[in-house]
Length: 282
Image (tube, rainbow, N blue to C red):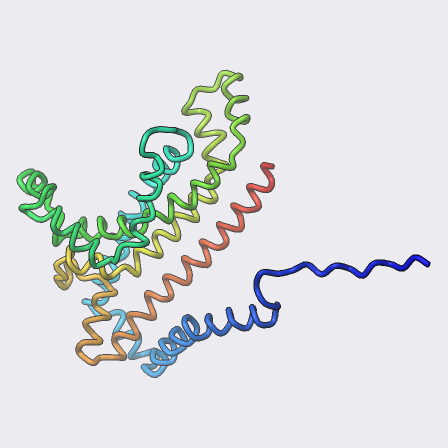
């Protein structure tokens, strides 16, 4: 008599679904959702009129404007530099490539305050770079350019690490076919490569912009923190906390949170688009 063999249950490295899901949800609630909910509830205590009065004040508006402009400058730089770096790391072999690839993750590992101190020392009037730039009339420290520099340093890995895997998976036979048809290198990049990496590139730029909006530690040293000149929104919220103005700090933080959530939703939509785009190319 032949009996059907019992199905073999696949072994899982992690515990069961219930325990794994429960652990991750508990972490999400404790670390992410509860602080965000507390911030929203604190902001809700203010009331719409008081909230608008805080976020539309002259100093707050100036801080938001400086933050957005500096983040935009940093994102434009990272969009170009990050794309070039991802291209170099995927298309060329050279001595020290592994080291250069590892250095791209330094902004993730390095404390942002240390980065801010290092940038301030380098670009101050007597620093290695500052002693060349200052006489030429290009000050960096205590200007919006210093803020943008610090933001660019901390957010550039988002562009590199988003574009790099897409370039690695891109079928280079498409480029070879375009070359046999007489396309020049810049035409191959513009019409074959760039459309394929565009969704991932946009997603990386969006995430980098969101990261720049929330940067604090790398900026406080190089910015000078002058109201209406180099004071960013995150610093203004911190100052309000030191003044025990919790409502003012909550209102400013809620605006930054709103910007971040909008950008993260846009980044997720772009990443989903990129995933569907890659599947379509296979």
